[in-house]
Image (cartoon, rainbow, N blue to C red; front, side, top):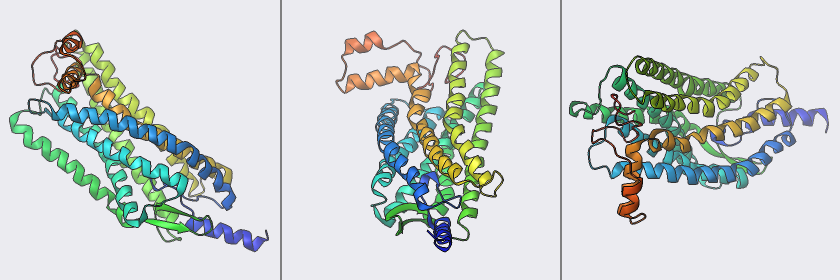
Length: 365
């Protein structure tokens, strides 16, 4: 290949190469088309089975949470309202995964309209899943540190307005994605991708802005909020008297640790890609390709958090387990004798279904 042809390929790639939209993979260095085939081959091998697993686990786990909460005989306390919305967000998020898995194998075959709908739905629920975790943390903070129970009658409207505000905020944050998402055909690589489409001159700038925005809004600020809330909760529990407070601490710590473990690797990779853009670390083609693959893996790990939410916020609770068994008995899946044998005694207070200890003096733990 002569020098003019080489630079022609480089210029073309810098302006046009994209991969799956939700990974924000964009050409970040002067690499030849063959250098990106490794990334595409890895995605076509890794994403379909992994996203299929997440789809099944996420749909089943969050579906069970929704079913149990819908069959609750009394009105739901604040935590359960947020858990219900969180489960809906996680279900809607995992529903989009088969589309991205199909794109990794066959390119985008669903058209421009579906690209905007599916891409926006992924992003809306990506934000909603994280923001409702913050709402749950804040509710626990109020309920324990200040002993303010948000499920009181005069607070019911506040809970639903808070949930509505979260959804509206997520939709507003996703409007730029809906506007710029498009199904683009790449004649050089003979594939179509659902991707954010910017002019070739501003693509890198916009992708850098998006990455920084996601770092701050979708990770750093929520993490700071959750760490603050749970630190105050832990300090309050340590200064209180409660037979099962140490058990509650394990649940609280698991919430922050799992969130941190699932999303930190992805945001570290995003940070490295931000540093590579302005040539801080130096643009090396092999590094860029490796970061693209790392981005795919860590983004998938973050999506796995949707499957863990039901375990962390519901299945650890005595009341949830009892209600889940009651639902199975009503559906004829288990006998009444099985229900009596395995259901644990719990108080009849109006606590969250993820209560770890119904005898504790703090609601919801």
